[in-house]
Length: 528
Image (cartoon, rainbow, N blue to C red):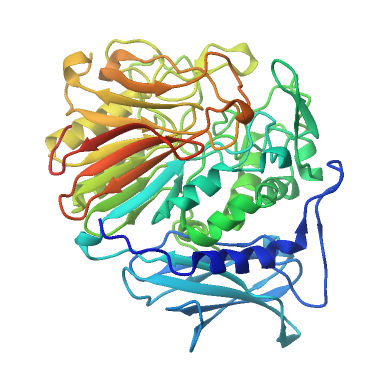
């Protein structure tokens, strides 16, 4: 595969980190980080790009005060004769965040950019520029595609630990220099407060960087925004964002554990004064849209949704699902009819339509929850289920009915090259689904690969549901629950599509980047 090296990466990251120096970690962990304010706007939270295409991309920044966002792009890091883009005025209404859409970019090229923040009253007064780089999608098949995926960041009280160097997994991912990173949900844990210290099993103490907004569960818009800002305190994440474009989806912890539309929080849960989950979800969605560059959630965007398809050249389309917003209530999930399911009817029909019209060699279905792994919902002690499977190995029931409909559609329309990627369950595994092992047989074989967490508690492997005939080909998971990141079991995955043969290789990797499992799939097949 002919990925070109990243030019001047060290100098790019130096520029990004220098501009981020205004973020100072507290000497005492009880104090919140502070800005070193000056007379000019600063961009101490770094930069990031999202949903990059063959000729466009979104650039994100956050200012420390009202400012006009300006982006300059260049083919080289010298920024000779840069192209200038005038972005939005950043103010309190968006928590001083904003995105600028770059368009008309050359395909398959390295783009260097820098963001300047100008004083709204005096455009000549600008802060120190923050630099970044990304590759546009190549229209040439021979260039291949390579991306990473994972999820689950700062969960179970395991936050930024300065003793361990923070979120070190992002440095390992950056060294692979992927075309983009797919975050499969749980970008924050809004329901997981971060305390200064946490006891480690077997003795010892985990230390966290803390902030005021992370001291309790998030309920207000300000608290949700603070959860997203918290992760940007990590230098590894900011450097990664400056180098690698993101494709972001959400799951439950962006709002609250195991949430579903219409849910009302029990009066016994005294952590929450706001009991309407719909109210919390609206606030969380707004903060989510402010802190990630998503074209479908930008102010004025017609779609106003998280699910979307990203076309990554002739080799790959990525179908980003939202398995949270349109689902029915968590339940025993054993009903014999279920038109709403976990996707909702409109999203399911969209997915079928887009899969049928895709001409890409590979169709990656980016799911924020697994298909055949049983994920219980133990909230308030109810025997409900959170994902698709409910542990009954027989004919499809509940949300499985919708997945069966989709799998049947893929088979009968002879849609080739589909595979599923997900996170959520805090271990890594590879499942192969085959009708010869299944109760429901009207589908072609497919693979589901699981990765994560990025920096959260690790948990034992989830049991499998036999409805679609899964076989666990590989798994790495602890035997104990909530193993801290200091104990290992932090994972990410890699997808590498060769431009010559069209073969797709999945690698499941550990926190340091070492490969645990690898599987190569052949192009042009309905089932694998």
